Image (cartoon, rainbow, N blue to C red; front, side):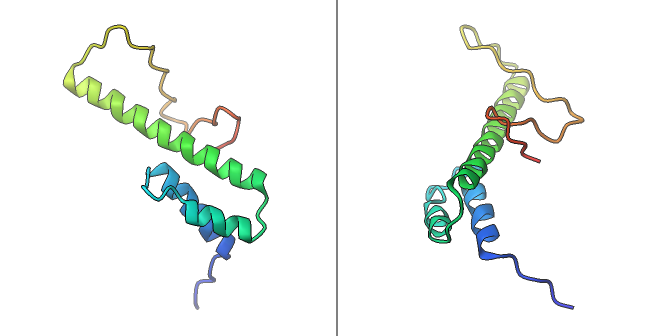
Length: 101
């Protein structure tokens, strides 16, 4: 039994999100163009971009916090660090209220 292929729009959305979340130098602009050419709604594209940026930012904050703890850094005059999401939650919603899981 063969696995059904994903629709090209799903592949492009996943690739766009991965490029953004990974800070890829190409930024997913090729996928963005493909999605627009396929007629994918701009609101759906914007939601994917919002979620990808949120995941990227959460990962960066977690890495920074982990580094600071391991380096025993105490930073003065720095903006307050947001409270990390509870360990039980797989993610927190984006600032725009989009669920990322």
